[in-house]
Amino acid sequence: ENADLYDEYILAHSPGSLKWGNPFVIDFTREVGGEGKEMSVNTTPPVKGSLKWLSKSRLAFHPNLEKSGYNKRYTMTLDLKSLYPEIPQKLRYASFRFQCEPARLSLKWELPRPERDRQNYMYLHVRLSSEEDLTDEQIKKLFWLEGPSAKSAELLVSRSGGEDGDINIKIINIERQESASDLSVRWEVPEHLAGTGTSSRHFNIPAKGDFVVLGFERTSDESNNFRVYFSDFLDASQD
Image (cartoon, rainbow, N blue to C red):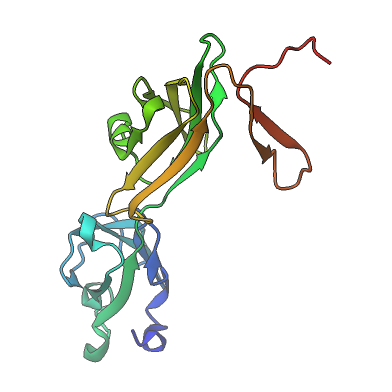
């Protein structure tokens, strides 16, 4: 607040909206702190958190929010007297407003495919991206399956290990029935994540013995190539 009055003392600070897990960082105009230098901080409404000096001129406040604390506006007030003994009394307490965005979770679905080693069984692949570190058990609890083909289905979780941190979800043992059926996959996003609520996707599972085209998918945004999904493997020797 009143940033222009603090030009002599504060060089820069974080924007008012913090991405999930990011601290609120303040850069001072000169080296006034460092490890061991204590600071007084208050937040309104009260929120737990910790202060850490990143350098002698950079201070970070890490809010530790409860699940219901995201997207609320907070005011953090610092007592600058310990850093600048000469600061005028009217500027002693500097206030900063911020809010924390919830972690984001996204899902990328693929169409069902036939299992290579099991006739009349299919699988479904989903790629999950989450800014929050979720355990395999937490991920499994997000989803539930409905429909005749869901009776024998099983959900597996694996980690890609890449820098993107994507999580691979594979729903296996989707059994084809005597007639075409609908597989409904429902998921519920926890209240502290962006996109809170329950959503669902429905997939057509062909009947046993039916050979059908399940759908098309562009291989990339820049390409005119498409991937075609069939209910069964094609004969490589067929024209």
